[in-house]
Length: 376
Ligand SMILES: Cc1cc2nc3c(=O)[nH]c(=O)nc-3n(C[C@H](O)[C@H](O)[C@H](O)COP(=O)(O)O)c2cc1C
Image (cartoon, rainbow, N blue to C red; front, side, top):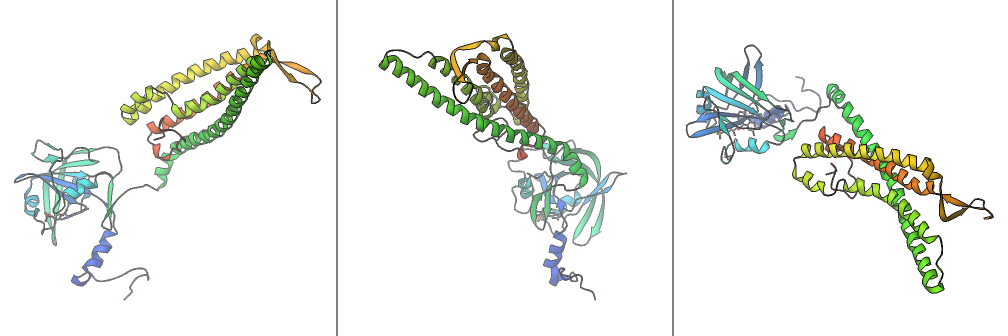
């Protein structure tokens, strides 16, 4: 007799091979349900994975309790019962209703019109009326007519090989459904990388500007108080560096800190409401930043930008023979660059919040040094 491929264990089910039979049956992954009835001493539940859909018209489902179960007589006799399909994070509920489990102790529940206990928050529920009972060896096949059904979104709890797990779809329909989210994530993480690079460069230049500013102030102190004659250019040069430092450093603070202050309120709110509120604030700040950008552009390119600084000069040629006065536009350009970086960060944060709202938080890359804006 053919034994099957070499990687298969093949056997005839019987008392000797009960364990192997169980193992083979356990290869079939199922969901997990809890079937509840009004027991003689109050609400009663029974964990079962033998649940199956049976008929659309009339609406029928089935499951099979073991005749050996202590609770069997109550289930065989029950006229009404509710079948609860558990979600991926509800294995604790499953454990309550196996032998020796805590049962309904401390588990919030309601009682429906038929007197059946209802566990809220499950993935789906079928309220049934006993329709038929069929012989099934050491089990009884109970067929229930579904009087009312309910469901919500979420991942199911899966049971296979004696272990609980959850479900990850790999088929094409699911992938097609994920395509827009994948694109949004790629865009968000891509812009995140660009911003991270630009801002790191900005921080280096900003830090150099701070160092130069300190050096220039010390030079001025030396000239004013030691030599006795102050130089003409240090104040304006320090202002120049200060503006560039602010323009290049502020976007990093915005990216890491978001809306300081309002963040405390946002943290108290549930995830999606917080993300929605943050999204609204980001849209508002984008409007303000873009308006600011328009103003900065006209400052740099308009009449104001054509003026020259009072005391700052730079060499025009390599031999340092000719010097020119630095145009004010070079100073104002710090505002333009700063606003462009702030806008880029605001767009990134906006996309991040959109991802959070659409439930893709787990695939977001964290912003280093943050605990905000959906990074958690
Ligand atoms: C995931 C899972 C699925 C189960 N499915 C069934 C089932 O379909 N039928 C059944 O009789 N017992 C099933 N059991 C075992 C029962 O929940 C119960 O523990 C067992 O029948 C003993 O019940 P008793 O305490 O009333 O004697 C399952 C247990 C687990 C953990």
